Image 1 (spheres, rainbow, N blue to C red):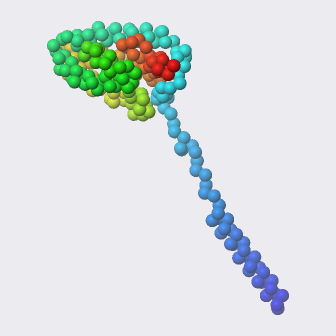
Image 2 (cartoon, one colour; image 1 turned 30 degrees about the horizontal axis):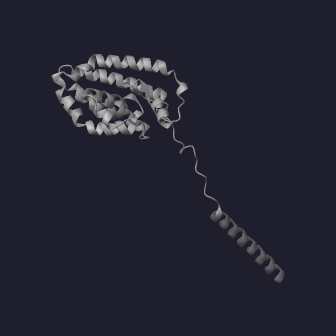
Image 3 (cartoon, rainbow, N blue to C red; image 1 turned 120 degrees about the horizontal axis):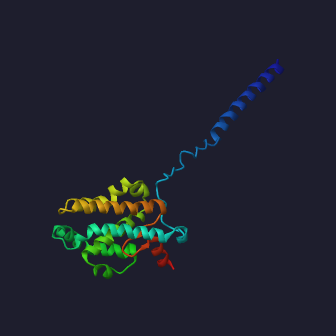
Length: 215
């Protein structure tokens, strides 16, 4: 009888230890490793890469500059009337009032003295700011999807204000606004495809300017 009770006691103890072991294993088992696939960001092929460490000799800069110069000449053929046409007095006044702020941004993003910018005519300041400084500024913010995911986003967030101002000014305002939109589409495409911008005023690219500043 004692032998039977001892066997039953040992069996009960064995079952208890097994159950306890399973519970302990469950409590100490590491949590399942989450799949990393969902956390890997997808990159839209149309999203430009950050402008940094791009070898200048990777691109045919002379061809790019020729295209940029032609685009600028086409824009000036339409927009030069802004310089002295009385229809655009409101536009000139608007940019004259922004002159100090544009000069500050010129110094910050182009590395030139503010006084050099302030010495330019209002029309020249307009060209510098809207065609180069303003879009270049947004390339430094690190929010490429916000500003450069496609041409429509670029226009809506960066060029729309100037386009609207021009299109509502004077008899030829819409013509200039359309020309502005066209040259800025060229600027956008350059940045989207190559990762840098072109200064129509100097004939240099932003990577050349950056390289000169760091050397």
